[in-house]
Length: 110
Image (cartoon, rainbow, N blue to C red; front, side, top):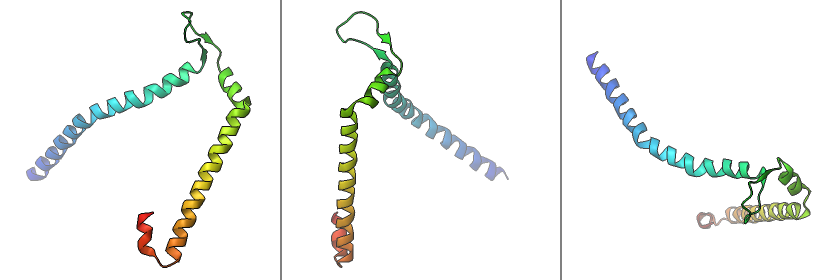
């Protein structure tokens, strides 16, 4: 019974040390990943001239409404979808061709 308790306590100590070593990495990852995302979303709700010293004006979702009404935005979305689907189709067809043609060894290179 005492051997089982000591094994459990050793595993808890190892787990605690694991969390102590991982915690700084999680903190830095959170700071450098999530903070810029939330800051960008917050900043997008304001209108600010870069060289002006005046405080920014709150405009809410007007930037997003302007974006959704812009034909340039929809053109870029269309181009991205066409490029992505075209690339995916080419990759899928080339893999099927190589696997079906009996050259299974070449599939590892794609």
